[in-house]
Length: 119
Image: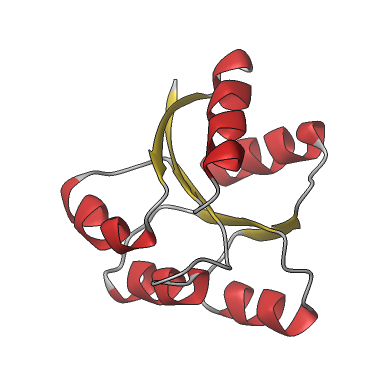
């Protein structure tokens, strides 16, 4: 089992992703719905992959990507967001995002991207 960190302010999305990943035997998922908690968690734990939303109150996805890069966290970050914005996607990739996926995402494609990010 891989350790996946899911960061999204939408509880319904994080619950769905947690169940989906467990059903596909991919993950022991940790969920954060309050993006202000990410910094502390990244200092204490390591993950195989991070699933990150872009549009969150308090601390946004780009800020989290900056922090991951600045702290030299080696964990691949897959952006999974409802924000379909080419400029934002380019910024995210330049900050080190492994991939930028738009919700709703095809489940098979999500599994493929996560497996590629982990290996």
